[in-house]
Length: 83
Image (cartoon, one colour):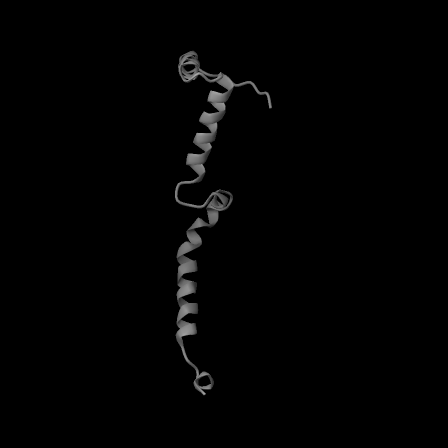
């Protein structure tokens, strides 16, 4: 996809110099830089799929509480289970 972006001259010169020093095209340099930035922003501690559900990430405490209740129930032996 083609797009136009506006960059400060100094940033563009630095990017162009870094790309040249690595022997890669400016297109590849920007693509890799954006991919790395996106990867870092979406993979802090949550799995990648969680990025779309960031507002739900605070439910992990509730999930742990519910799992604790379920585990307690499974540890309970009812009289009919003993026979």
